[in-house]
Length: 122
Length: 122
DNA sequence: AATCTATTGCAACACTGTTGCAAATATAAA
DNA sequence: TTTATATTTGCAACAGTGTTGCAATAGATT
Picture 1 (cartoon, rainbow over the protein chains, first blue to last red):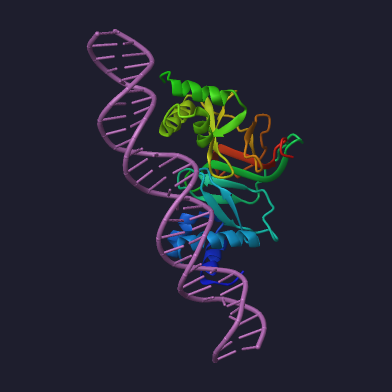
Picture 2 (cartoon, each protein chain N blue to C red; picture 1 turned 135 degrees about the vertical axis):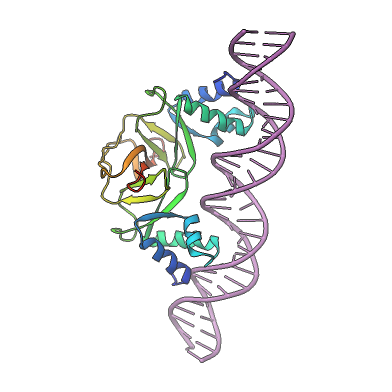
């Protein structure tokens, strides 16, 4: 993947935080640095590179967050916390659910999103 | 809540299955019985009544499914399985994740969605 | 049958995300 | 440094999901 201003800025933004960002939030932070479509495409490539991972928040919106212990692709199944008051979504890297599914299902991905009040809003 | 044809049909549809339905799927099954906005509003009321519960699937789309052991509101935290091949979403009533979150977070809801291949698509 | 209130249909809208295509630009090679 | 080329970008247009206001309709109760 080529090095471009858009890529650098978006990656810096995401890597600098343990929060997950939506496309709209990234667009606001970039203040017109690039077109909105470009943001979608950069996010797609960063995910393919394994630098970020994406998931759906409780409102059905895609969120993007930095990968810390991933190699070429996202592989851990940590939980995310979605605050219903301030809207922030945080990676809970240390929280992984334990569960047991009937063998007839072949599980490939896991979305485990908790919601409620974050420490700031409690 | 008043008894209307739309309410009856939508509730029958959802209760007759252990699958979760999206708005679009319900609209297709009802074959023009009522307006699409009505479907959204009936679903909203059925959820308030505790007859169905809703959650977001892996594509960010709302899914609605019957409540079996709920009283006035949905309160269990069972898993859902989203098949990436046929798109169906199934309630796994017997699967509940075990996890531990730092006390500073106040968890109110849980969305635990597994995805991969369902028994039919394996 | 009359009344009141909940429900419905319609139109219009906001938001999220995607696609095709031409123009611009990063990178590697000459 | 210039050239070549494949990637990236901007633009316009679009599809899908979900929401709102308002007037018309239809349950339920009297």
